Image: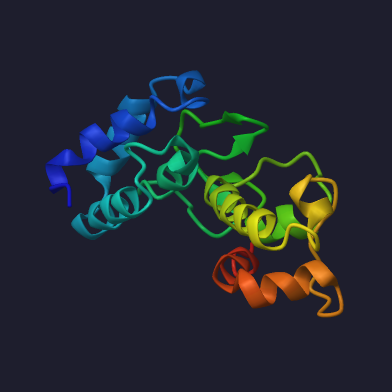
Length: 176
């Protein structure tokens, strides 16, 4: 486990991932938010950073960046840095920005609102499982042309319930 002083290296590693280079002063803002957090918040961030291997796997960077403490007004469906297509959009004031959770992105048509960084990470885990284990049942979801449903009669939902329960529950539990 990284020691608490290692969070500066963690923030720097996240900010080298694709998309993050477009965030003005990414590492500086991330380090400032981490520094302002409590010991418990920094520990939770570093736990997530190590668990998700964010120092080496950029596809988890959005989820790890979302775990950085310090957003004012932080609440579900609200982050300092939501995603707009493939670009992370951070406010300069570190105030809360409304964004779509995993549940919303998976089950509702897009409305132009940003995607939450954490929700985006959860959706990727669910889609990865669906597209490897439930390929035939979830073709539309895997190709990003169909939304998920909670209908137990739906073949994709049924397959996910049986084979991808943990990521499905994490996504559906990510509510605004």
